[in-house]
Image (tube, rainbow, N blue to C red; front, side):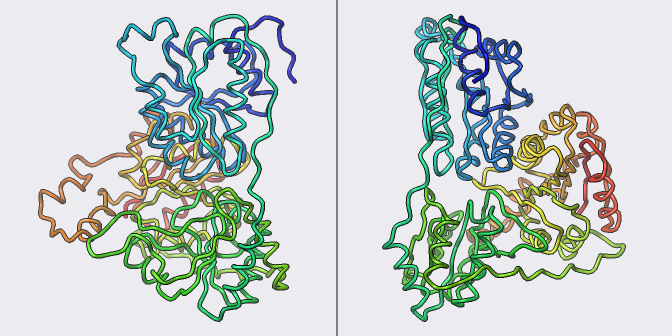
Length: 520
């Protein structure tokens, strides 16, 4: 444990205790009620402090950090209004099942009864976006509260733990260092579930194995999964949204369940049996007139081999042992021909990206309407880690990249960013510039919320000019290169696919952030 003074306040005891348990990054947007933490972080020098200019950047960055570092950071947020700004990307993080500890400042205990201007129900604001919420009550037990938050966050699956920090217990003397307590491990494999999965594979019915979370992050588990599929004839799918997939040459290519409702239903219609590994029965993003919410056929027999709190790689190893399957060598996806000069289109975007993604890239995908076409690039490119929007709350791409770059400073980060979504948390570019992060942000600019135009038709609407005007971003036209430059990030606009590829190659090879506005 780090050396510490005999006397300390509550805030310092929390900082020292969290650091002793391996937490060494704090993403922050602090206010007055968190100044004691700002002081403690400065005096101890135990954590890297990363400033976000909005709370949505803070929580999105903490999510990206957790996905790549495979451990939690701590966030520092300001009262209920600050937490409200952070909530959208906390929603995404919670759906991703990543570990995160939030410290949310509150008014001093003695001040809370006076309904000051920033007073609000902090715990009530935090509850819908957290798996665990607790308010500290005194300086002496404050660090123990933080250790319980960390224990919850690091359990299986990862969780969002929010500790409310009244100002006075942070500045009061009497803080005490608390020791780390072990988190809850994965739920042991159920022998009945293993037997049921085995029967499904031996049934002769068309079977799909739907895998998510740690399986998609484990190259060896994917090799074994492919061996199971080869042995049994089962198909493999991933959910529509995934926190991280290890992809590229030498790795097993896994198709996703499509986002569009009709395509998803068609994809899953053939299956009489489904085996779930760290996943749940797939559900449509939204309800649509005359269409089901659950995507598997109503008569499909579903077996959960490992739940969200299980150990997917271990479950697959046990299943492979029972059927005598061995790891299979990945079948490389052929690299498409490098596109020649011409407009950037949805037909050539995947080929362009797959030819220029650098080795060991972290790809952050918030391409939205371009995402279905761009996704194929990950399989034929050099080995890469593919991070995606998990909770459907747009505005995560730039912050997610920011946190991933903090976790893996030696790896290039490429952001595939829809233009409409970028405007939610564009401030994250400033943090990338401040931190000198090697992030190349590609704005896929169609100058509209294009995906919502399709959704209008899905609900049976026949949109007119007024409806479409609410979904277009062309009055006035956004200038992302100018916006980036104003936050310290250089950039350029391209409308030719060959220029796009050249710009990506040059930007990824140079240190520091860069933005490319690609006109589609």
